[in-house]
Length: 99
Image (cartoon, rainbow, N blue to C red):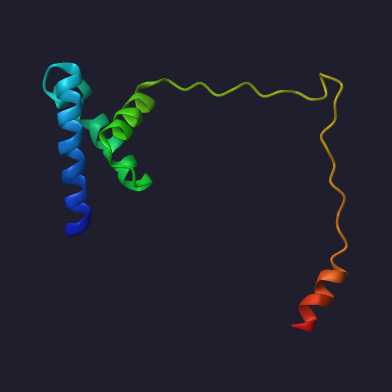
């Protein structure tokens, strides 16, 4: 891990530990779990949002169970899938040939 990334991660850990310990009234890692905390910090680094409230939001997101929405059958509703006509690209090709 490069030094810039390590410094960003340490800053995020410090911010998060401070925010969570004051909000939870205890040690941050025992309340949240080291694995989930690490995953939230990795996401925060990927998204470039290292503020404590953003990491706390990611922790909440990771702890909320997700259920996929049921697929809708358009035919059962009497609808058909939209059709998109193919475009004639000959004019565009002529413009490309001029450049």
